[in-house]
Image 1 (cartoon, rainbow, N blue to C red):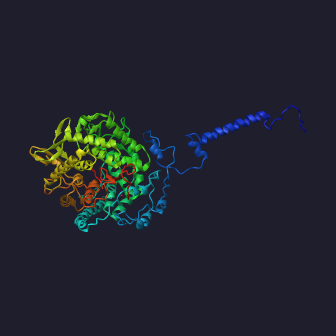
Image 2: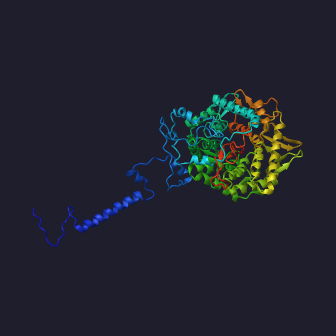
Image 3: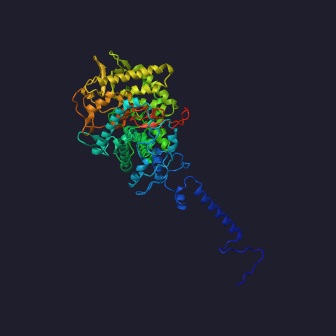
Length: 624
């Protein structure tokens, strides 16, 4: 058919549209396409659309969990993680990180030459085991371990003593303590491997109820002590257990304090000593599981967290279950700052800084910190003050936060010295026999006793003397020595030469327990920590060693004491470590580089923020 062009008419399109209509339709269509692609690539919440149209990226496992906790936003949400960690290998595959050059480590950094742990020669044996599948993959954050090690001022395990004669005088003692550690560890692995603690009399394991289903407390508590003593095979055995068997998928109720100081402290320390990624990853994952404890009106955490439900609670004995305990919520700062350091997630640091904020605002009776605080109202529940149990490590963590910060945390420094002045004014006493002690305070009335736990304070006061006001330094050094002398007397006045759990100063009796319920000794480290004597080692061997391991005793005043059938994990973490350090060179775990947490796990000083001279290549204090 012939189509005739008629002048003045615009031909229709195939859809019956004239040219102006077609132009408008195309203009509308192009605008719609632009809008859709703008939403796809530019809007902040377009992740669902991106998954439809864009190639999938490597999943960053675990970040959803961090974001979900307490509604906290992801750290650096708008920035990519620098040098993200590679994805974890599938079971049976080699970890690519094992094929890379190890950071400055051919063996342990013992003194100035490699010794001890033969990392490279044992790598093939360790890697031949099928790699366990991580809980949720690697933590998506890169920590520069080589840079950290380069900032240490001393080799971790020190340099050799040039004086051969002086070294030989202590070598036998050091080797004896090392043998004690080997015996304690081997007894544990023989009878209770994977359980939380060993029962040496019955030669079996003990789990307990305060770890929420977590196992292996003795393994993780022992890691850095085995490393310190260069017990190569034992350390590799412990590390392999952590990699293959330490399971975080548990559902019980756990003590926030105990999990933090033992498990997280032990894992953090093991990472800083070795650079092994499994320790960092598991420390951070476990830290995430503790965060629900902080879900309170004040942000002061409760003492118990349920790993399954995420709920929290307080101990029934803590003033009718309504209170948080000063020593528990006050002994998180060191570990949580390092969790932020190793994860990049500020939520850990924010939680513990908020605790400080609450404590700074609240009125304190005569400048003293009572032991019980309501996490709901933020007020003291009762005016009971103790430097021993319930209060002890709160004060310890103040001075150690100052030291760990490279002496930049002025808030911690001021809080510590203010608290110490109040303690000195209201709690410090001298007995008729000339023994200096720190009493307990109940609403203005003094109980003239000290607990074994309070014996850490001699070491703490000595540790903080250097940074006190100049006119106070000599006073604090003398005070530290006098308190430690008193604790020493509590040992020498018993038949076993081991100290009781608590001792009194009344009715003509000084530095002795008043009743049987206070006469037990459970392998505690506090006196060793403050005043490490050779006689303590001898007493441990004579009265606490059994065929199946080391055990606490029920009455230090009996020449034939009964054992309590518990080899506490802190005996390996603290008591034996402090004894070993007593007979080691001063630059082993140098105080310039390390601060011990309250379970004696060494954590590094932050030299980055320090005004000290530039550091060169990387001992400390604590109380349980």
